[in-house]
Image 1 (tube, rainbow, N blue to C red):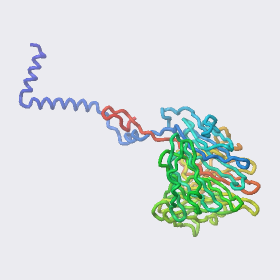
Image 2: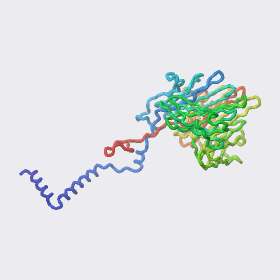
Image 3: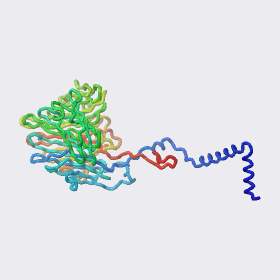
Image 4: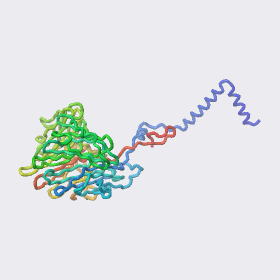
Amino acid sequence: MSPLKGAGRRFRARLRRPGGVLLTVVLVLAVGLAVATATEPEPRSAAATARDAAPRQVSVARASGACPAPVADATTTTRVSLAGSGPIGPARGATGSRGAPGEATLTDPAAPAAPLVRIRAPGSGAADAGPDTGPLLVRGSDRSAPGLVAAQVTRSTNATMRGLAGTTCAASGTDFWFVGSGAVVGQRGRVYLTNPEPAPAVVDVDLYGPDGPISAPDARGITVAAGEQEVRLLDALAPGITRFALHVHVRQGRVSAAVRDLQVAGLTPLGADWVPTAAPPARRQVIPGVPGGEGLSLLRLVAPGDSDAIVRVRLISDAGAFAPAGLDVIEVPAGSVSEVDIAEYTGGEAVSVELDSDAPVTAGVLTRLVAPAGKLGDIAYASAATALTPATPGVVADARIAEGVTSRLLLTAPGEEATVQLAPLPPATGEPVEVVVPAGSQASVDLASVSTAADFALTVRPRAGSGPVLAVRQIDEAEARGPMVTTSPVDPGRYVVPVPRVVADLSTGLRSGGG
């Protein structure tokens, strides 16, 4: 008999004994447990697990937005600008590299093969729009997408829209707030809805006025075709309203939204400007860059919720921050837009407005410059804005310098001291300028100190360890018939997007976490 056959008989005999099967099962389980223990990975710390599960920060690879149709005729010029800083920080491209250079363009959909402006980041470019130019679509790809900004500035001596009017072209999105404009005799506001995406969009515009929410059926369900622009007149949607707050929200798709205000007194132009996008309602807001000068500075606040808001006001100037006596607290009824003139508290100086509220609010300031007798004035809007940080610096797409024309940057540090580096983007030349803004104060910088180019773009980058800082670019022109002014906030750039980490797990398929 062979040894193997003998062993097999002895094994079967043991199985027939009482308890033999149980002993065999125990032995098999013990062997399995030993193998599992030998192959089990080393236990990982909670910190390592959390780190590996955190999303990767990947550089933005595509950017889109739109500019409202420019105005250009015999008395009006519109300069459109495009600028991009490119990627910053340690974020990598989607494939693990810094990515291809890509390009960014400003294009009229009616002539897609011939962009008005084409750049590669870091860089900038500008062009004058023609009289038949439609809404402009903003596109950026690869390394030219992060930090991409487009802007337009209109200069007019026209009898009905004389002045400077500037706006940053909005990135495509689904939610926008505006505080400004009206629909009374001598004032005309327009809402511009532009769709830069390949699919149609459906948009609702909620309106608020001095007496609360406004019923405006024609402001709901607005369809905006792909690559097209829809314009709505505020005096057609809700006539007789002295001051507005608007909430543009998109049911379907994505759009870029803008609001323009034009004011006259009889046959005398009072000015025209774009109303900047306001920060969404919150309990704390800062409105930077309210221009100085003689005239009115109308602070407008909206409390869109169901509760009244008690708002504490603090003004921030070059000399520091203070609560204006008699205007330190404002009550805003629920759903309404309140207004108060802060000009007498500013002393004609540029200021920023800090708001602390017990209910969410958003806000803006209309400045109406009054010129000496025989001269004309202009208007400018400021809105609640978002602070720049070292991780989210901003880009000014259009700074201009000429005889009688100055560009300045108003920097506000509502909390801690801020240190900001200003640097021109190619093709402009110039050395970076570092500006220190004391805590609870603001500083004004003449942009001729950054570059001597006639028009140029620049980056606004808080240094590491700096406190949050808000920035506004202001252009002034001493025109023969009176001063012209426009301001535009410098918004935080979009540089990275979070991408979840995914690894293969043969036991469960795909799961988050890991390398």
